[in-house]
Amino acid sequence: MSSDTEKHQALLATLKAAQGKGDGSFEQAVTQAFEHVFEHLERLNAVSGSDEGRALHAGESPTLR
Image (cartoon, rainbow, N blue to C red; front, side, top):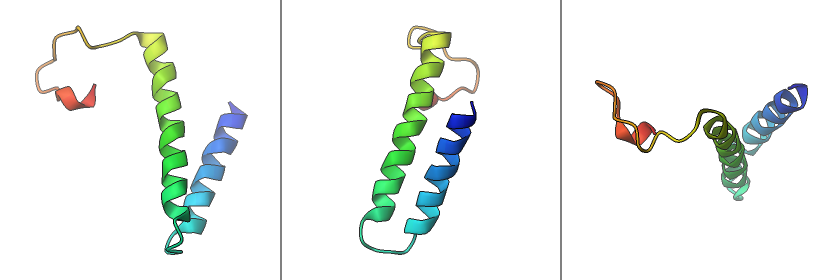
């Protein structure tokens, strides 16, 4: 877990350092951050299973699946 925390801190530091540079580094940092988020989501989905076949709860948005 600490390595994941370190990864999060590194991603945030990269985002902060790249802000306003205008050389594409911010876009690269955002892409890396989203890739990491998607890794987390894949792990969560593997544990909880897919929701695709389940009916929506009242007030639940289908775009949040």
